[in-house]
Length: 133
Picture 1 (cartoon, helix red, strand yellow):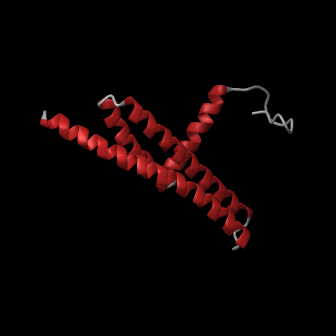
Picture 2 (cartoon, rainbow, N blue to C red; picture 1 turned 120 degrees about the vertical axis):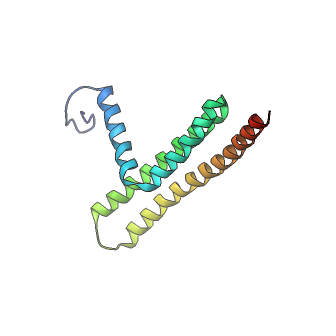
């Protein structure tokens, strides 16, 4: 891909190449970062229930907060990897950078967990109602 600011790299925009890069990064994160994997699996389980019961607004809400949480987790992992690449020695500045990154991820995880818990409770009530009637 050509860097438009530096004038380096290959010419042309290739959307398929972009999609491959996105999927490759997500696959790597799911394979090697357990925190991304289990959150994605938990969300997918509830999303399947919502699609089964045709609760589209709930489905979209959970999809949005899951995407937000995954973005924060991926940014956090990338920032930590860059910090570890820059220096392997302990540094107060690197610690602060990693802590701020973890705080951003933590906030998104908290919102995701609250929405997931509320929506799981709502789905459980819906399933019980559906089984009784």
